[in-house]
Length: 249
Image 1 (cartoon, rainbow, N blue to C red):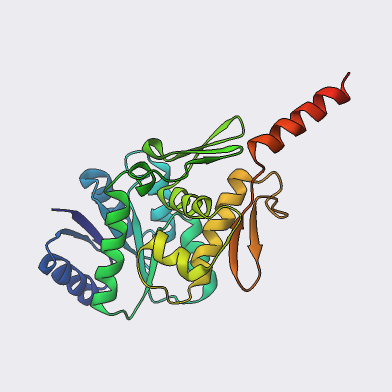
Image 2: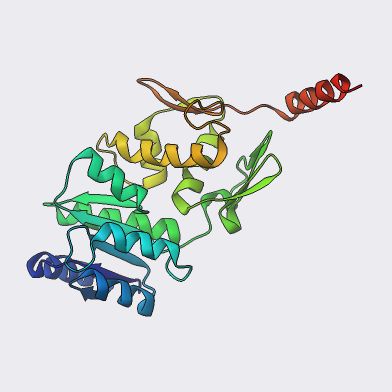
């Protein structure tokens, strides 16, 4: 039975969420402010945290950042629950380390779908490890067991979401992948055209992989269509290496 920690200062919302989660078969714990929520997260190390942003004592953004910095809670998926629905609020939530974002008021079924999707993603080694799918191309190799990428000669640690997103693009190397396909495959639920969710995580990937994230060479935006991963092949890399070698002779 998966354990879920609900951190929300609204008793009515918290109880509604807890009751429906328990009816769905989850073990639920609750906290009404950021301090208690963070303490319970460290004590229980739940399978999922549902975190309100507007909390007393310590706000949800700060709680999420602290949880991400602590190795005991760094990998626990966080679903943010909030009445804040502006794009900038979502961006701040994802930048703080949230995995998904649900705006109040929400339908119970939608909430449960998001919970199931997050738990599916973190309750397993990624799909990449289970199938004979593409795990490397040119300078990129994915290591599913550790959620890492070997990028040229460097090892890059990825979050679960970043790994799944990069894997999704790698499977279609050289092709444009639409936002709806990315949301379905990576987030695990039917999309609601929430392009900002993808945009933030693409930006995080570029920060880790691109020489100049503001002018990406590898993870490209195809405006109006989606994203495309374009990597040099092994042959092209060897040609570049030979060229560099001859230029020094």
